[in-house]
Amino acid sequence: NNYKNLVEINFERDKEFQELFQQTKTSHDLLQYLELTYINIQFDQNTLLFLDEIQACSDAFTALKFLSENFPCDIICSGSMLGIAVASSSSFPVGYVETWEMYPLTFLEFIDAMGINQSVIDIIYQSIENHKSIPTGIHEKFNQFFKDYMIIGGMPEVVQTYFQTKSYREALMVQRQIVDDYRNDMLKYAHGSEKIKARECYDSIPLQLAKENKKFQYKLIKKGGNARYYESSLDWLKDSGLIIKTYRLKNPDIPLEVNKELHIFKIYMADTGLLISQFDEAVIKALISGDLGYFKGALYENIIAQILHSKKKETYYYEPSQSQEIDFIIYYQGEVTPIEVKSSRNTVSTSFNNFIKKYNPSLALKFSQKNIGENSQNVHYYPLYTLEFI
Image 1 (cartoon, rainbow, N blue to C red):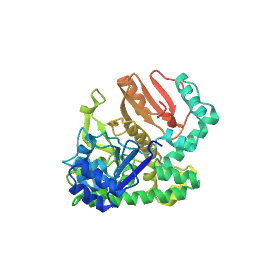
Image 2: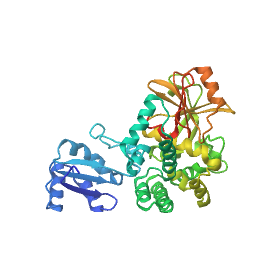
Image 3: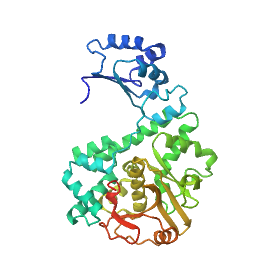
Image 4: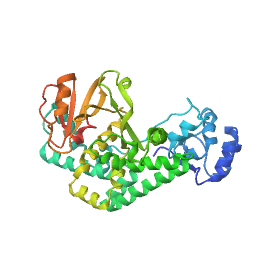
C-alpha cells in the first residue's frame, strides 16, 4: 500500500545475504550489491527493504546502525524470537532503530476481521459511556463472538483460515503447526540445556492452568523440578513473547512493583487459542459446544491476561488467604484497580467484596457474561467482551 517496490531478504532462507552482511562494512557497498542483484529496482523512498528472520544474522543487527544513518530507502526488520536475539546481542544498535512489539490480534481486531459494522461497535461504546444495558441481541451475539475469539485466538494465519473455511478443525491444524514451529524454534535458538527445559516449561502450561490453584509449580514440569533448574527457561520464554508472567502481590499498595513476590506467579500463554489447541480433541469439541468444564476459569483468565498484555498493562494478582483471591490487579487511570473475571453469568464473589470493603479502591471492575449492570458503590459490572472497549 505504501511503496512501489518491495525487496525481501530472509536470512534463514537466503544464506548468501548472511555472508554479504558479514563481509560488508559500509552502506555504499551494500547498496551496490543490492542494485546489481535487483537490477530493475531503484533503491529510493519508493522502495522498502524488508529484512526477515534477522535474528539469524547477528551482523545484520550491527549493520542497522550505519544503514539508519545513510541508506536511501526505508528498512523494516522482523524475526522469530526477536526478543531473545536482541537481549543476547552485544551489537544491537540501541537508539538507531524504532522497535515495535507485535501481539496476537485483539478482540476488536478480531471482530474487525469478521467485518462487523462500525455502527454496532459504536452502540457498545455508547452503552459503556452511558452505563446502559447493551441491546440484548447485540450482547448475546458478542458473547458468542468472544467465545469464538477465545477458541480461535489471535494468530493472523489461524484467524484468516477460520474466516475462509468457517472450520474450527482447519484452524486447529494451523494452531498446532504454529505450536510445533515454536517448539522447533526453542531447539534452534535456545542455548545448551535451555533447549529442553524451555520446551518442558512451555508444555506444562495447560496442566498448570487446569489446577484450581493456578500458581506455577516447578514440580509439575518434572518430579523434583525447582526454580534453580527452570527459572532461566521461563525467562527465556517470557523474553521470546510466548508467555505472560503475572506475579502475586504481598499487598495491593502503591507502588505495586515493589510489592510483587518474585518467586510466586502464574504463567499464561500469549495466545489463548494456542493454549486450547494443546487440549485433547474431545475437550476442544466440548469447549466449542459450550461445555467449558473445569478449564473455564483458566481460559477466561488467560484471555483477559492476553488482552491486558496487548495494552501493555502489567498484571498482578492478590491472594490474602487460600480461600480468597483477586484475579488481576492493574494500574488503571493511575489508580490501583482490582479486576474479577467470571466465566458465567454468576457475579457473586466473596473475595472481591472483602477486598472492596478493606481497601475501598476508587474503581473496581467485574467482568462476566452478564450485560452491563448497575454500579454498586465503586464497582462497575461489564460483559467480558467489553474489556478492550473500556
